[in-house]
Image (cartoon, rainbow, N blue to C red; front, side, top):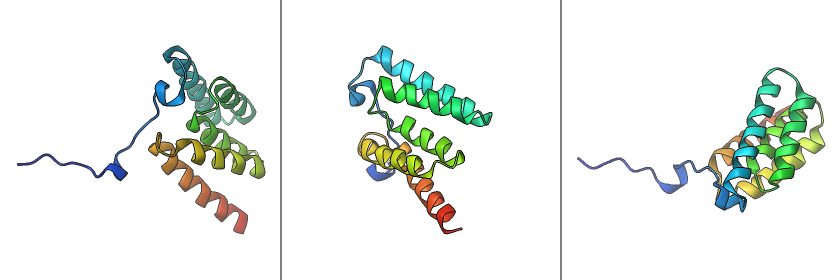
Length: 118
């Protein structure tokens, strides 16, 4: 029996420190800031969450997940224009290095369109 192989388009890929052109140490800091922002978002502490995502972006402006997560928090804060800017930046940065964030951003874009229609 042959092993199952996923087509390349379906294989999830997350960025590495090398992809982002930062050190492993900074990459760990960026991921931690991003996680802290997610935890704050889940507690509905959205302004604090935006600050954590912004700190991650300041440390690594090429990290698409932080832009996507900040966009979600900004959407909940009714900062739609800023959220859309973040989503567009996440798409630009994720292309080729972060398929998981790219999928999440596509879902978020469709959510924004629904919100704007209502």
